[in-house]
Amino acid sequence: MESHRSEEDGRLFSGGDTASSTRVAVINESVANAFFGDSDPVGQRIGFGSRPDPSRTLTVVGVVRDARHSLRDAPPKMVYQPLDHSREPPEALTAAVRTTENPESLAPVVRQVVRTLSPDVAVMWVRTMRQQIAAATTSERLLAMLSSAFAVLALLLACIGVYGVISYDVAGHTREIGIRLALGAERSAVLVGVLRPTMTIVAIGLAVGLAGALVTSRLVEALLFGLTPRDPASLALTTVTLAAAALLAGYIPARRASRIDPTVALRAE
Image: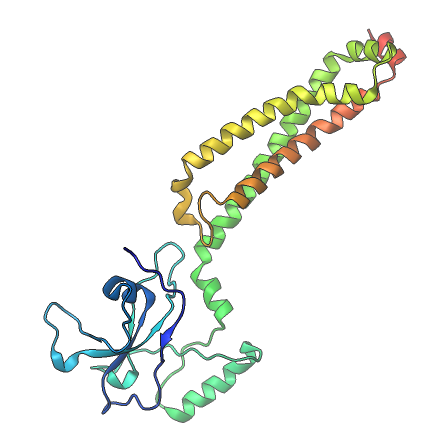
C-alpha cells in the first residue's frame, strides 16, 4: 500500500548541526513513502549503498515536501545534509533566500553578504523564484503558446466553415423561407429551423470529439501540470466554448434569414 504524506514532520537543520555533531539528514516525501511507508521516519538511521558504512549513516531529523525539478518528471527522491557534513567541499552552491520584500531589490544585499562571508566566492547570478521558474519552463511555455495559437486558429476556421455552410444553405432556400414568412411563420421559428440541423451536427461532433479526447488522454498526460488528462472542468469548458462558437457562427446567417422580406425573396426567383 502506498502512503501519501501531505505535511512536513520533524525539524530542519539548525546551527547545532556542525561537523562535530551527529550526522543528520532531512528527507523528502518520496523517500519517506518509498522506504518507511506509514511508519515515522524521524529518528530512523539511513545509509547509502548496499552495505552502508555504520560510521557514515545519517539520522533522519525531518521530512519535507517533494519539490519538482521538472514539469515532465516525477519529483526525485532527495536526501538533504548540512553543508558541514559533506565529504568534500562542493564546487558550486545554490542558496535560497526568503523575503517579504521585493526580491529583485534584495540582489545587491545578497551579493554583499556573500562577499563579506567569503571574499573568494564568486556569485555567478542572482534570480528571483519567478525568474527561475520561467527559465526552467521555457520549452513548456513555448509549447503551450504554440498549442494555444493553433487551437485559436482551428476554432476560427471552424467558425468560418459553419458560417459559410449556413449562409450557403440560406441562400439556396431564400424562396422557401420567404414563402413560409408570407404564410405567417414566426421569425423565431425560422431562426430555430435554420439553426437546428447545424447544432445537431455540432452536438454529434462534440460527442465524438469528447470520446476521442477521453480515449487519447494519456498521450498528453506528460504535457500537463496540475491537471489530470480527464479533468472535468477543462473538458466542460472546452465543450461549452466550442458549442458557443458554433452557435455564434450559425446565428448570424440564421438571423439574417429570419429577417428576410417575403416580397423581396419571392421576387428574387
